[in-house]
Amino acid sequence: MHCTASLEDVARRVFQLLSDVRFLMSSSNESSRKSFGIVVSGGPAPGINSVIYSSVIEANNRGYTVKGLVNGFRDLTVGEPGAVINLTSDGVSNIYNKGGSILGTSRFNPLKDQQHLDAFLAGLHQNNIDKLIVIGGEGSAYLSLKLAQLNGPISVVHVPKTIDNDLILPNKYPSFGFETALHAGTKIVETLREDAKTCRRWFLATTMGRKAGFLALGMGLAAGATSALIPEEFQGFSPTPEDIAAILFSTIRKRLAMGKNYGVIVLAEGILDCLNPGQSTALQGCVRDDMGRIRYSQVELGDVLIPPLKEMLKAAKLDVHMITKNIGYELRCCDPISFDIEYTKFLGYGAVQHLLGGNSGIMVTRDFDKLGFIPLESMAGADGVIKSRRVDLSSDLYRVARSFMIR
Image 1 (cartoon, rainbow, N blue to C red):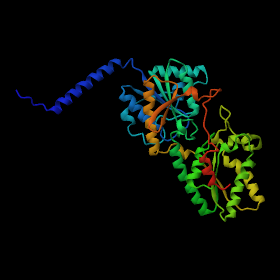
Image 2: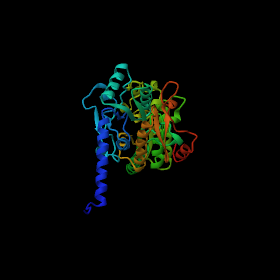
Image 3: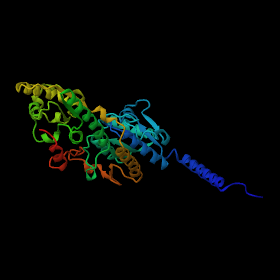
Image 4: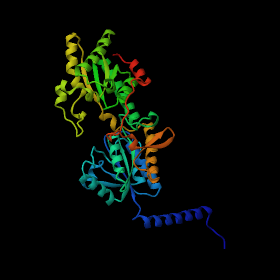
């Protein structure tokens, strides 16, 4: 008898048999094997979907199921229908280069009281989740730390996300989403600069940066803005709106002396928190969040500064056309550039690896070609709040940016 099966056929049948065995083994253990959970917290940033993509694929490759928490911590905690969805490699295969978050996001604290915490933990238990990947900024990192310190129910790894670039990472590496936001913001400021020149006008462009001015400084430098102001320049005292307006007035007057009655000044939104609220009726009545911080969506920095600035221009008999522009929502859900796609694939893969390695209460990091982590506890100050980094005014970065400004 002659064997008619080719080597390829034999190999194919052996592979199928091995696959069937693995399937039967995984099915027998499915009820006891726990799942990964992924939650996105805080504001959007380019690259979130790429983290989800790489986390799901790596976890699936390791034989684990993955479940996504819809709308941050909120929906699972309050018991909304459809709060948890299944995530598969096929389902996320085309999202890595897309902006936004397929899971949504929210600013919600599941630790605000014991009732909320119990409900959230019960939701994780009901969905067989014991390994949680939290994608978020410094506020979410605090939640990750506290959840990890519960010691038992879940293991937690935090993936650092903030357009503000204010998380302390190895070798001053940027946080993911920052480079994409800087790229997109630079294009917008370049367009505003051309419009300003064409129509002989001034733009006061406010962008993100509550504590740190990296984005405003970078956009101003890369786009050739006339000037940029960041909150770090006002640490240690509380300027009045008139103080800031005087700096803007000086810039405008110097440009006029050059025969140029146009320009763009980029402002970091965090300057609002530096101002003395007693010196501005707009700040006295503005809406604040649960932590007492100004809700930036409710008040525009430009609107606070324009009135005193116009008074100064009027007193100097200078005819200047001023327009305020907020650059914020345009940056948060951009499609990520290649830097952030590569970066976030690193982080998602690393989050799964660290959790399977038994790590919890850590922030996954990338240092060029190496994956690492930082214990979240080491990043917290005495008050428990995650420490943040700011622009160093003695750094070459600031010196270079400042040298191109007109002040």
